[in-house]
Length: 598
Image: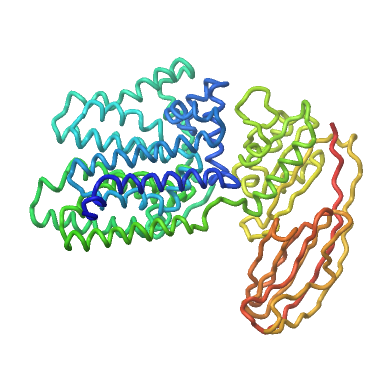
């Protein structure tokens, strides 16, 4: 009796409800959006489209995604997340319908939503307001139309996919082949419906029928992000597929192979196999090529590979269901145990709620600082979307003070774009790369003075050897500038600290916890053995980080101590090692900033 009750649809829908509650909970608990870059920008574009209709054709923002998501964006960022949660729900429900039509039992079906959320990238795209959930929903709907042989509507739906994601060109190619295979020739022209509609709109707006190609945001010969290895997406499977997803995928491949060996052709489902595996493999192969060769603006983001995962998992579960490996009671118990483990891991996750990183804390502080200035006519040029998100202004809305910039050349921008009184908020992440504001270029312009600096507690080595943090510059003509000079002195040099195995914490010489003026400490030291860490703790872990010291490798980090609060800088010895620490120098700089000119 119990088996009959549990084997009803009630259980799989209970799992779906659990997943939805889990997503909503972390949506409300996240400190910042899970993707404080692209996710916020998609939200800004979708929200701003109601004020600037030309944004409905924003190529990078994905025009069809903007059109469908824009009503939700008017309710704020969480409106975008709710939109994605609804898409996730619809994707799962359609998957349930496909699997039910194909005779897959409810026990296997209930695994589907849990497997998806077990992959960190899938959850991040949903809670981050990104475009991948919309594309995956469309792919699942396309798979349903394909299974039900509704080729006309399949062609119409697929025709709009290039305007949901750039990878949407791939389903068009696959669908044309499928229509040819199924001799549905009359529906082939409809595969281009979406392109023709948007091309005509582009002809009216841009006077360019081919704007989809000529205005592409990805026309880059070489990626500014560099390049990686060919196997990047294969070895990173855990991010976009997850370990449960990998097991189901591999098991599905084995069962599919067995179906072919046994010549059970009807159970192979050629159309669905070609579409789902073609999408999944195509996305991974194409992006592996782009990342390995440094093309098309590829940054090696693993979340890209989530596209196609839901449809290939549906097919994997279908193939697994073709074989009865064990008795039903044993099989159901095993699946129930797996589902319980995945649910438990979701409840115990450490990935969420999303917390701000060390640099993101400084962006938040910088935004709060600029908000306090009550600007009038000055413009603020920035690039990191989290800054404007915290500031509370959409850069795509009218009468904006904040300008999301990317300077082709700082010298030209100083001459034609910036006006006296304007600000540049330069972060160490996007500033030198996407925003194209190098420190060496800034130093050529004495009109750009530092009015505030927010140094991150976590100093990491990067390609440009910069101090991680945010610097706010103001464009002030030389004749209006006030001479301001920082005072720097050495407070410790050439000191040897003997770290004992029984001492877990060791203070650095001459470093205090309170400063009467904003002070920056420059620390240069070398550990003679592995196992030590230098720790910065501001206001009892309000801002906290540590950097591991490697044997005989000197590090030079900078830490900012504010006047309000308590800052600790010390050596942590968690591994109980006994060694010497050479303090080459500790310099103390009392920082002075140029007053803001209004």
